[in-house]
Length: 234
Image 1: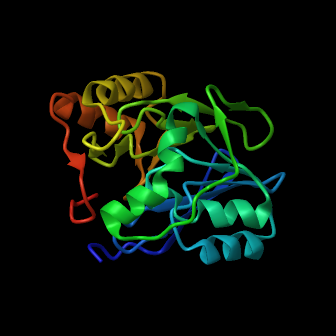
Image 2: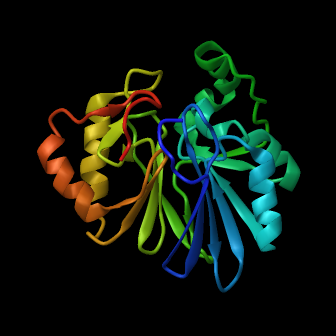
């Protein structure tokens, strides 16, 4: 593996416990398990692989799963989505403009990575999503990496998928990608969040909105894209 990142990292922000599971050796994608400490309501974000580890984590901490959220449906972020959905009889939720990509995820997984993943049959497509029960969050549509990419904004932290990673942006040369849209989305996202909000990306380590805003000022014209697992993600 490129880095010696731990396979499980844990954080606490905004009344929530956040577990980050690195669920793939090649792409080192992050799967997040977010638990409200008062209600124990729990959300899984981007179940990319290792479904047994995800289920075991949910079982070990004895919580109630309420949502399975997808920031976007590229195969490295949805490899465990179908089995997790079946295990809990729960729809995977994603933006309506990414439904086509979700349906074709098994084909892309085989074409690009010779990886077999099951198709997600139980999903719910949204245009806007605001959840007020704990842990409260809202979806912010941030097209560019894909047409339906979203960031999920909680109290003091957010999950950006492959829209914005630490000192990188997501690639835009795949189906649905658009570099102009991506720049507009990053501008919008960084423009509505406080400096101390914590960004949890789809790959690599977390960083703050303040750090991201300073980096974006320098590299907005030509930001480096995360193209493969060999690219350094700080």
